[in-house]
Length: 394
Ligand SMILES: [Zn+2]
Image (cartoon, rainbow, N blue to C red; front, top):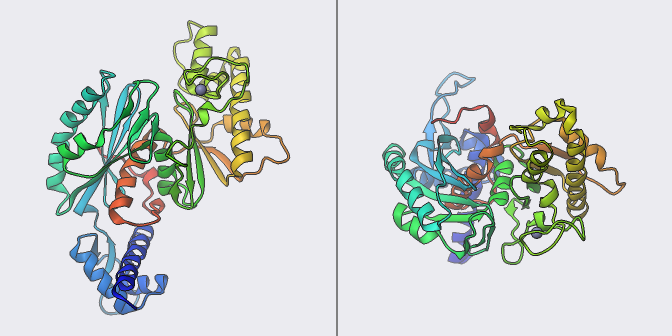
């Protein structure tokens, strides 16, 4: 075996041990050897390195079943560092800090007061700097390990923003100024991609997963073999511009009859306000379903939503299709109405359901993407940390 091979294997073993430690919350060295199949000496050497690097820490909490010493358990060193996820939405910026274990430790909102990109970047730097300073002293010795940013638009594989419909940003990059200001690595991705990644990491640990975001536009985040699928140059998942009416409504993309003009939440809200100008609130489907005056609008919406989902299902044969929006809540009867519309004999999927992490998905996805890059691992499974039942600190 030459040196190159030895170094590769060392790196691979380190990755496996980090992945198992994250997934199992806390384990002894013998547990890790048994689960991974690595010999005890290798585990011991690697853990020693991970302790020196402050990636893992030792705890003595669990009582041993037998007399004698309590076993020393290992877990990810949550207090050693943190990452940040930023979701730059149309009107506000949602920010979530997570520690190295993936637990949310801070959440904040920054209003978007201008469409000017420089001003948006400056306001992010101004508002985040005091919190970063504070958390850098609280989460030591590593501190901030990276920032993941979600953009509601097209982002290429080089982290450059190609186009955002709302703010009209085109062919710009935002990483260099933020990296200089915060002295950390900054990643940029499409919001639907980060939402899908957060679903996989926090709530549904399967290697292939699809998440449809239904906000002002419609996006599709694809996780394939534990990786975000981006296509040839990063444009994959622009499913909102799938044509569902060949001679339909004009879209800003230049085509007619794009799916998001019929099945996004913005499209639904526009139809409601056009038909019922006095209907002021539209917080969720439960509210709309209670009032039968909205029946035909809901039927029209579900008709188009199901048509697009039918196409996604037939292209990908997804195991799990998660719908993320402000109006679709977990357990909503809307998902049953969608199932009823998907009657084709070749529609094959295990489940379509609403997201449990909803509006936090994109920022969580950004934060955990930065964490995955820092750990240099292939898979992250934070389901055991039970994020959904834990409180996000403010
Ligand atoms: Zn379009």
